[in-house]
Image 1: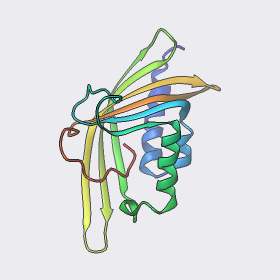
Image 2: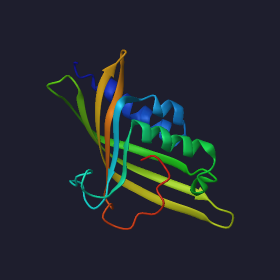
Image 3: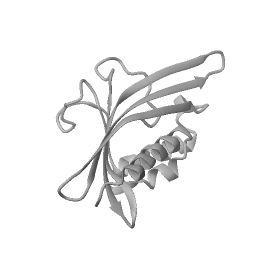
Length: 161
């Protein structure tokens, strides 16, 4: 698959918008059936099969996570956080198998109003996407989100990063 930088950037920007706007069904449609969504804990180069992860979901667990978020039963997201992220420093490389590996940085602001106060969090990290074309569209088969503070105490992470 020939690299189309504009298509790749638009994919990342669309994914960010869907997460920010809690459009869970549309975000879920961006994944392949064999997808992995990984947020490491304790550094960037851990092994999710041997070390604790913040998130390590296969396709079924991604779907389950979204069911909980959409159900209203996720008390940590009642009311839902207001989110906005900036995606930058995008690098894309075509792999021998025709897939595309994309590296990018992000900054995510999260604000959630509670009954008596407002809670704010800033999330920053580096994302690795593995993309491939299915039925004419780019899809994610892998997403790794390496938070810069993943070796410290992480507050409730009930949002999509």
